Image (cartoon, rainbow, N blue to C red; front, side, top):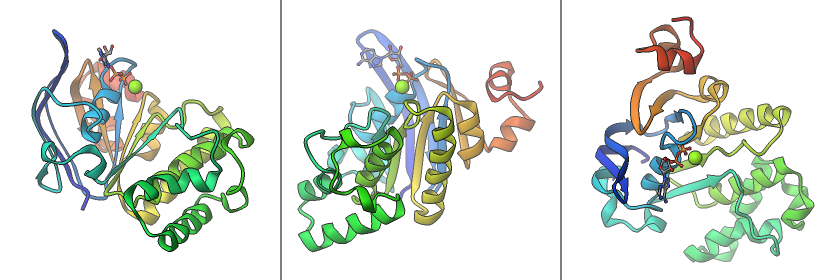
Length: 238
Ligand code: ADP
Ligand code: MG
């Protein structure tokens, strides 16, 4: 369903190669975290997978199918941004319904999925409000709800919690973890926060300047960091 494979993928902006040839496989159902300092290429990598940006060379496969033959909207991936990207003039219900409307999902099915998403995200009482009448955490839940109703093969999160205060971040981390446990859908989660990476991931991909420094479970990276950069980033005592 949601296996994603990158084969010798590169990305250049003009003369500057920000992603050197990169190979990576994200297994179906995995919670994979891309972690690394600001500017290391996390968002670019996610945008390449989503198809919001074209790769310069190489190939991306989703369930074995070359993604270059599939337009972004049909890749079955749902992206959640830190900025929420909600429509301020629409109610929560209409915001969540929007991608289904675009995809031509019948109205009755839309309502069913909205109810289920609202219930899963504790938004049932807020469906008639507008984004401006919600807290930051609630807005982030709406953004996640809008992704859920598309029933994607994978969720792509780009630093979804970085606009929230520390206490709320802890709660949202747990909610996203619960959602993953419940849906068992592939999730790729970008963060520069080590704690988020260590607590949420099945697999962590440590990036530096577009290069993969190491891939492994939180425990593997903690116990056997390959170099000082990984050790420093993960916070293990190498
Ligand atoms: P991160 O998300 O890890 O902070 P980004 O993927 O946003 O990093 O950026 C990686 C590198 O690519 C940075 O050096 C950034 O300046 C560059 N970059 C990203 N998008 C563009 C673009 N549209 N045009 C030119 N350079 C870009
Ligand atoms: Mg980024």
